[in-house]
Amino acid sequence: MSAGSAGQFPRDRLPEVAFLGRSNVGKSSLINALTGHKGLAFTSNTPGRTQTINFYRIDGAFYFVDLPGYGYARAPLRVTLEWKKLIEHYLESRGTLRLSCLVLDSRRGWMENDLLLKRWLEDKGSEYLVIATKIDKLNQSEQEHGLRKIRQATTGRGAREIWQAITKTLQPR
Ligand SMILES: Nc1nc2c(ncn2[C@@H]2O[C@H](COP(=O)(O)OP(=O)(O)OP(=O)(O)O)[C@@H](O)[C@H]2O)c(=O)[nH]1
Ligand SMILES: [Mg+2]
Image 1: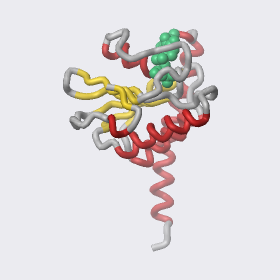
Image 2: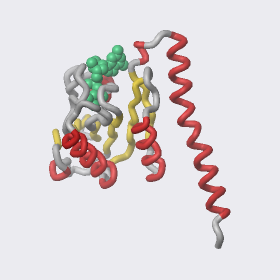
Image 3: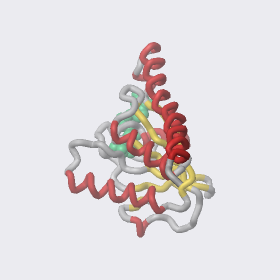
Image 4: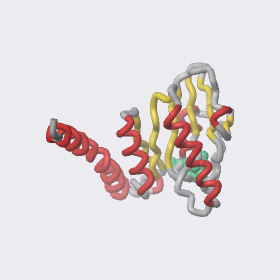
């Protein structure tokens, strides 16, 4: 099921796992790899392939939700803003969303928009998973370096939570 607006989201209240990330990182390919259906989600060499929110019902039990990628510089601004609105609306209001998979290209690691999204998910207290793709494009030492850098940002999360707790106790009563 493909939704270009919130009115078209499924209404059967099944739990959802969403795939988020920059354009072309491999979100749709990942859905195909996980389900073992090569042609299930459309993939393309051209960034900006997925332009609607696509819901794939798996075994009648849950949905994999393929979201349009962000950060595609060549998309017209109007389109970029529309996607942003649709993605934000989905993330903010979707009660059935159980897990967000934040997909990163292992060659690039964390980009500005990824960090913003990660922080946003943490502020909301949402469950999320960080997934690195295209590891096959790196050699052994690049793989180690790339994955270490990706993990670094996830360890920062602990520090943030400690600071949150500290500032909370320091607030005047
Ligand atoms: N080598 C390699 N190529 C990959 C991998 N994952 C995806 N690709 C390729 O990367 C390109 C983009 O993949 P998509 O799955 O369409 O990316 P997407 O994140 O869905 O992109 P948008 O829909 O534009 O947001 C395609 O040419 C894929 O074949 C991977 O793990 N390794
Ligand atoms: Mg896609």
